[in-house]
Image (cartoon, rainbow, N blue to C red; front, side, top):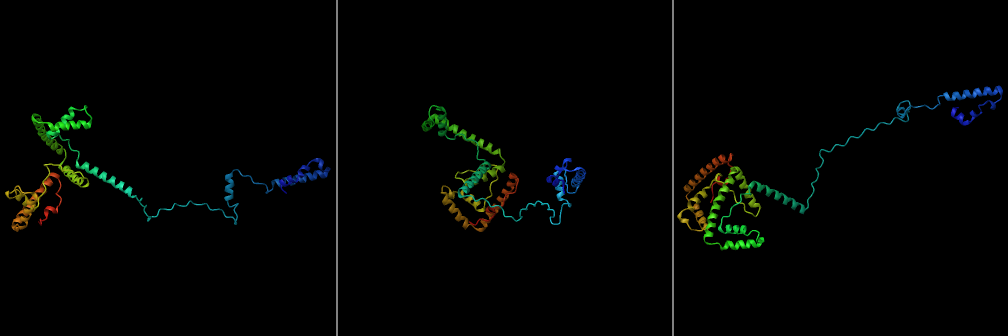
Amino acid sequence: MSWQSAARGGFLRTLHRGAVPGRTGVIDLQNQLGRVCLAVNSGLARPQFQSPISIQSLFQSNSFATSSTPPKATKTPKAKSAKKADSEPKKKRVLSEKQQEVQNRKKHNAHIKELKAVGLVQRPKRLPTSAYTLAVCEKLREIKGEYKQPEAFLVAIEHGKSISGSELERLQAQAKANIAANAAAYDAWVKTYTPLQIKEANTARLTLSRLSKKNYTPIKDDRQPKKPKSAYILYLADRIDTASYQGKPGTETFTAIAEEWSRLPQSEKDRYHQLQVEDRERYEREHQQVYGQPAPKSSLYDSEDST
């Protein structure tokens, strides 16, 4: 019997001298105290643990494990699944027709901007090269602030139409001087770039003229080697300056010279083909000297003309 059950039974409450008779009471009291002490010191007493950690370790130890309840295995974290090597690529977002139009317009504008930068479209400002334009510009400066812009232009235009006499001669002389000044300024501007840059600029200008409605004329540079001529073009240059075609319309002249070339003896054609080869060799030498690189191959001048 444990000491807890003895306490619940209430017999401890009878352990006093008045509850039992003389000698028998003393013997019974000693026996009861012995049973209580035996219960207290028995193995049924509750074990004492120092900390919660020791409790967990006791439950996981072999002393508390039984054959019917094996210890639980600790869970190992699952490895992250690796991406498949043959995974499908992400699908591109499908643009609407309007979005595609906007995207294409942006690309076109960016391409035009790049071509303009390479094409050197920002050339120096030109001075007026006619007496009429000079008269209008001078009148606009004279009446600046007196009229509103539309009225000022009308007044200046009427003044430009009415100039005559010594005033006209003065403006014509000024226009002639401006033409020379513009040519000098243009030549100085061209010389600020290398011949190769001018060549690339002319290529960009040709592309700009094809992509836009505006015509971009090529930059004139006397340092550029002249393109080689074909045998037929060499023959055309010789014949067009003769007296036979002076004063005749261009269409009629070109048609007649083309017929002459078709009837020309082969020996005479061979002479012009030899001139074509020599002109091509001249172009290749100049191209290497000016640009520092070989001339590109071209079938336009190397092949025989079939006209």
